[in-house]
Length: 226
Image 1 (cartoon, helix red, strand yellow):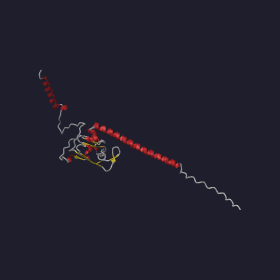
Image 2 (cartoon, helix red, strand yellow):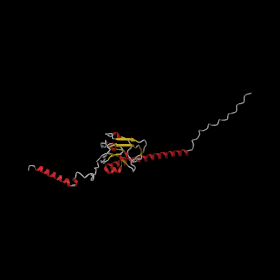
Image 3 (cartoon, one colour):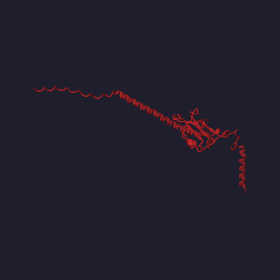
Image 4 (cartoon, helix red, strand yellow):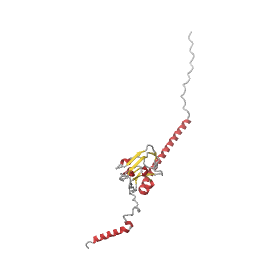
């Protein structure tokens, strides 16, 4: 019958239309902000800095290498490197950011800063409710506002955080193995030096050069002839 396909299509459309009102799996909208849809794991908004200790400033992974600042396409990252160093998550002495600012009004959420960071220190957050009456100053955030715990990272990006933790664990293990090997090498060198010193002391002082033999007494001179 002519038009059967069109009728079938219209019936299917009507089913979908009606179902979108009462089937929870088909609802496309919620009563925001009272109701919220959980963010997808691969969602990204703006960067944040990861820290691993209770003190956000002392536990920042960032070593102020400034790679993200140089690679940022809109140049919205501003970093000032510290003058001194402190121990990082591997126990190695590193610089840290005295200043780390991001202008969120300029940030394009491209994630390039995350991709180029060699220290797993900057990641993308899922927070999007950043409306502010101050368009410029209110969206210029510093390191205190950017610092968030590794637990937060695990919560919003569990798969990615697990891979990051595994990579950091390998680096920590390498650093600990190297430190242990250095300590053992120094202890071995000290023990060898001590053994040599004890052996030299047991051998006694080096003998003085042998003295020249005493001269033989000369024979009496012959009496002169008469």
